[in-house]
Image (cartoon, rainbow, N blue to C red; front, side, top):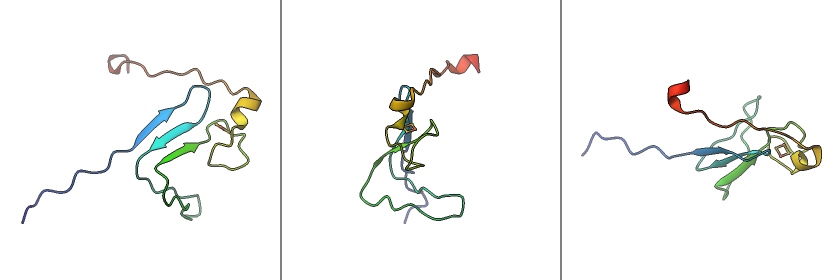
Length: 80
Ligand code: FES
């Protein structure tokens, strides 16, 4: 028997240019009231960050109609 714990799953969160957060990996998504979203069978999720989606927390494409601008980029670690 080994005492090593399994490698935790990797979740990647990527900002889509002028769009949603793209979340890849096994996640558990919970609302403010602790209700769990049914994400069965889905490994990639697009979460709204413009605030205009009618299906929050998911992106419905409203960011394009609304002309959402999110120009931020990551900075090198040495700048933080
Ligand atoms: S980011 Fe797509 S609708 Fe908000």
